[in-house]
Length: 66
Image (cartoon, rainbow, N blue to C red):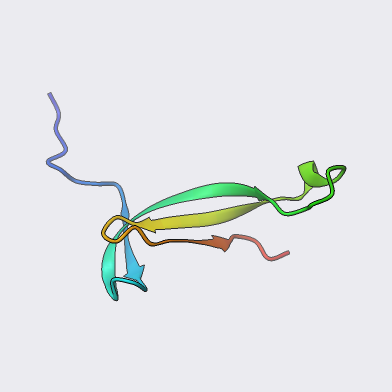
């Protein structure tokens, strides 16, 4: 049986709250930016969301700035 030995697949990145590099869980989220219901399906943009596993601080950044 294979084991991972407690290794996580998270990313080590700088955390503004912890003020050090900590393990973060990173995901992509589609966000609808248009308030107009007729165009909402065409206004989804990908955001990179990261959450610090140490303090729980969460932030997001828009992936494409077209």
